[in-house]
Image 1: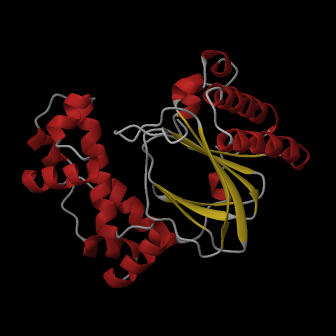
Image 2: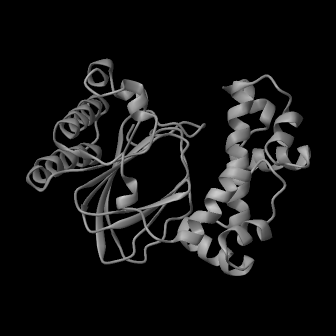
Length: 278
């Protein structure tokens, strides 16, 4: 039962906890996004997140809430970092908890950064440690126990943490050119832009931008462009009745056959199958 965490579509079946220490220089396998929430807590050390088109440096006592389907990549640059990732679905939250959180569902619709005051970190870290221990000693009661402890953790955070949703600039990094490239892609992905166009917008040569972008985001510039196009195309497949060809062309793909090939490579099904499966 412990290994039955994800379904064939990439969704999770329960609250899942991953608490571990990473040393400086550790590299993630790749960039990723997933159809569930991720709540990261930095117990000790620091790490850097590239999320969509912004970078964040997180330190002791920082929480980061990442909504579903949001591109992110993590790097560990200095020393060791003890970080806990808690993964959950919207239905794991429960109506009673949501009634205490401002905006209810809207609260969870955007990226959130919040900090635990020094005086409260021991209590919060203890709760997270108990969640990690529950994950480690998993039995038939664990799914409910993890869900209840997640709600307790979020409720405690809402009581004591300082939310930084209004001022993320206070913690993001200064890799300006990489961010300019990512923002240019997000603003112009529907147009027939090239790697040269993106490099020009960032003020780098194409080769130098490619190296810097991969270091920061764990993905090449062109692959990131395709990722953004595919994600938006996937959304339109579910939210419109437009033809696959129209959706492909509207999202920057000049060839519908190429769109179908890269779509199937990413989602393990054709666009038509994806539309029917959801």
